[in-house]
Structure formats: structure tokens, C-alpha cells
Image (tube, rainbow, N blue to C red; front, side):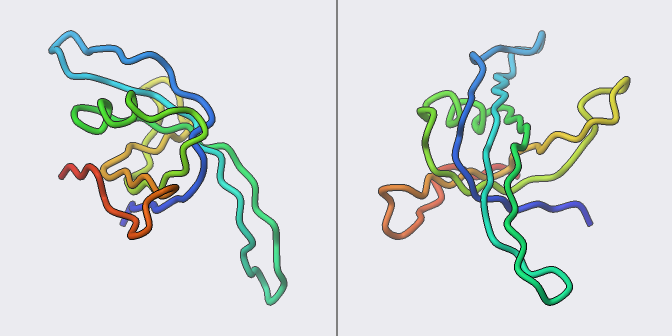
Length: 109
């Protein structure tokens, strides 16, 4: 199974672009910070995760301001055929800050 749920802050968003087929694409960087328990001890986790959204997800990302708190779900895949570097492909994005109920604003798939 390849499924990832991640909460964080949208720290960077590239300009919306389109594939040759006309599908919108948005790339972003999400900064995650949390405390996790590993081997019985607390560990502070901080990381930046490269993510990409296509179609309607790309339009939601394009509308989100940097600094927005998000909860994203998706899957990991290699960045390209020539790169084994991982990137999170977003299926669902939830804008958390200022949203008392954590409403899902966009879902695909």
C-alpha cells in the first residue's frame, strides 16, 4: 500500500502550468513539524516534502497562499523516470487554519 497523510504549512508554491494535454499542474513544498514516538522515546520531526497536484487539486493549490496550514493525502512516486527522488502526489487537500471543522475542500479519485 502506498498512502500518505501529512499535515504542514505550504511554504512554497510554483506557478500553475499545464501539460501538453491541457491538464493543470501545481508543484509545492510543505513543511511538516511534529513529535513522534520511536522506540519508546519522543522524537521531534521536521521535514520539507515536495508535492504535486494535477487537475482540480492543482487549481486548489494555486489558490492557496503560502503560509496556509494544510492536511494532504496522496501517494509517493519517483519524481521522474530518471530520478528516484520521492514526491508526494496529492489526491486530497484540506485547508485547516481558520476552518473549525477541517472541511475537505477538494477531493479527487
